[in-house]
Image (cartoon, rainbow over all chains, first blue to last red; front, side):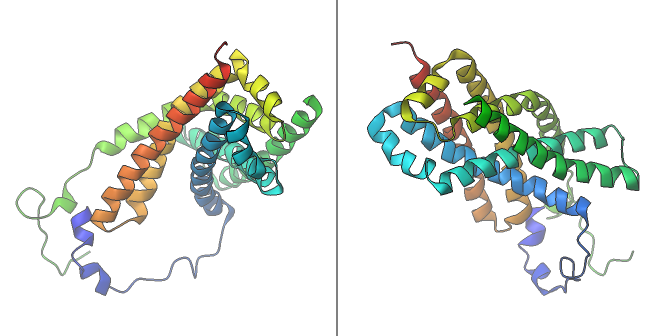
Length: 135
Length: 131
């Protein structure tokens, strides 16, 4: 599959427009959002690795990571990470339902896409409110 | 559909493009199974991670030091790391076309995901280990 692309022949073929002409629909936006949230979780896990390492190595090392973690940017990152996690999680549920052939009609597809977006936001808010109350 | 280029079979000529790639099935199976496990694990992990936000050094250590959060986070990253690795592999295969860049990207992805899993596990064990 790789060799077909490195021929150079594909460079010369004209492409029909896609992103510039297709009307953005919720289902397709949720599809790419599933991928984007996945990448965000990957990067977030990397940042959390540094945070946990700082926590493990002692107050000096923790000082190096905490100035980001405790600042505004740090809180935004954790908020974004939790939102990405819930969104990606519900997106996975959406795909699992589709795998079983459920909710594949036009109304069902739209419902699942809305549920993924709305549910992700609701779960994020719920978690943060409960966490604030618990601590 | 008529093709103006001569069809070259994968079996006889240089058409590696036309040979079937069955590796997708194993990828698909692992993603679906790991996703099922990550449903409860992800919810747990996000609860503990959100709980860490804003905590002081001692408070954060006390929280991670308890066995349940520690184990939950370790099991989470043990399954999430290969899941994330395969996910990013799909992304690299989709968007990186240059063969050399693709090899490098896949290699970096492989070791980054292993490193993240090991760092999480090591850090949590160091925090939770009894003195």
